[in-house]
Length: 383
Image (tube, rainbow, N blue to C red; front, side, top):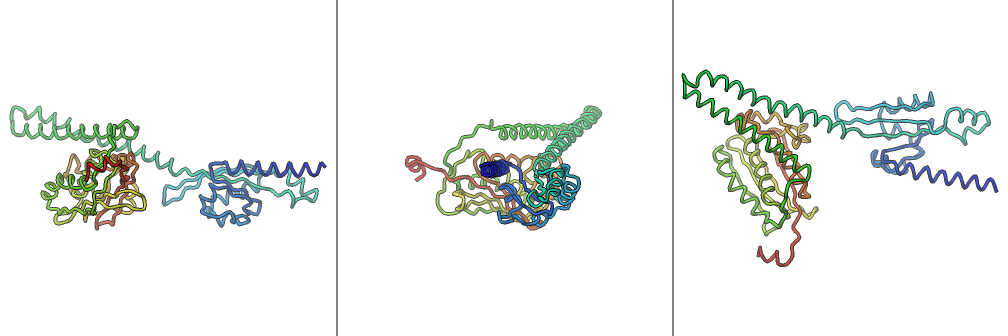
């Protein structure tokens, strides 16, 4: 009777252990002293992209991380918990690795003395916490503080210097004084625009930006932006075309906000496209997502591959910002907030925005918006 109860208790403990292990949000493994995997939870299988059948496989064949192997070997040798970080040098990948013995060495030695070593193996729990995103956000925050300091300091310094010079020439050289006044006004306008965009970005991120979502014709959005931006393109001798799919596709959007997103994307495309180049603004169905895709394609300077993942970060500016100096604002590069605002607006609509580019060949910025779900009366308005 006692043996049956012991076996039942063992089964219950095993089920409890498996339940707890599966409930862990972190990737977790159980390995033995030979590094063989005895258990791997769902987050670990997803993390390593391996099936359940990976059990009885050595962990160093699933995760080829020297730091992990070193920590495991030290834990096996000392029976003490180990912890360390793994950082992949050529990327932002950072893992926190923790290893703990599940059966203490003294228990294992006692089992060996009783000839029961095989029935009482020494197991180790391995957990991995991916800190990459947290470190990326910390870097973004540091960059943001550094950039906002720079963006504010540069025009303020210019204003201070020009004000000092203005005092010297305001009576002796009125024409020169007027030039300084105009430059000061330009710097003040830039600062006002920067503060306004920061406040707008903050409102969108906090969900406080009022939005009026209604069915809007995709073609109308494209044609409105085309009409507004064509004079700028002509002034910079850049050809501008539209590509519009047939049919009146209606999207669920705040037309003012989405027009601003398209305006910003086209503005950037013209800014980074040389004389004689081309900018295309278009829209087409994104059938696999029941959405409509909007895109702006240019034949400009393009974006380096390593910069693509960061183009939607606040204040991030690529080297291509030097392509047309003084195109807009101090430094010719704008505030560096336009794409960050565009991303927040699109995501607030339930869409997705991305960039594709080949350096020195051109770029394509695309985003999706959900198709509008309309009643019969709403549909009649657009027939």
